[in-house]
Length: 265
Image (cartoon, rainbow, N blue to C red; front, side, top):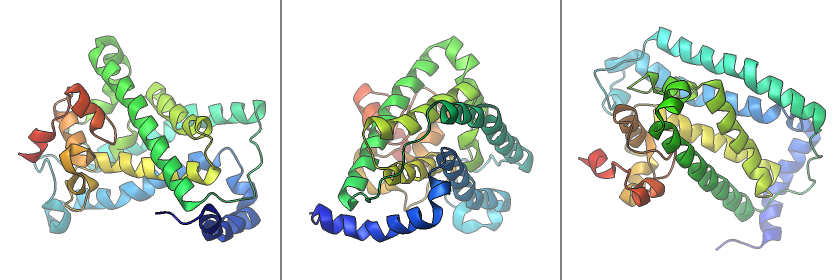
């Protein structure tokens, strides 16, 4: 059971006060969520990129590699990083600038959210995004024109690797970015919730693409394929008619597109 809201708020309030006092101008900028997400992408991807380059020399990770015969090269990694950077320069930053000029961001609230409120809002945002992308994903696989013109860019690599999580076309990136930025607003979430959710969703996205079925992954902790993880998404890149949900597995189980049993055999 959660403690009272006032006790939980007191738990996060000193941290929130410190953020407002020391970094208000930075975190209050509309560019902060973008930089936070991109920083998370780099931070979460880098360790697995090192493991990929070391290969068998890093036995601790290599033993869990899903497609052991396929290894990303430095060139492949650089192409994905450049794709992510160029997408942000060409699409994300100009759009954020226009929104900033047309609709200046509201002031940040003085009070922090309670712990239970933050956790509930994060989970709600992740569930909503999971449904949105599931529908979008199926549509762009079932429609040949949409797949060829939009989503095929992401399926360039049959064996995904950490940097490839951001190997997206501009339209797909902007769609994903729109949901990520507007879902917390639609659900009335605290800014701190939006930032935490931003980082968690980036981590989950990178984790889907790392190419390693790590034994401590949530996919092994939650039963019945309720969390997809790297193994499920790796299989999606091998067999694109399965595992459409980005994070959780319930929609694939409901609609019969899950390869949960294949993953465990």
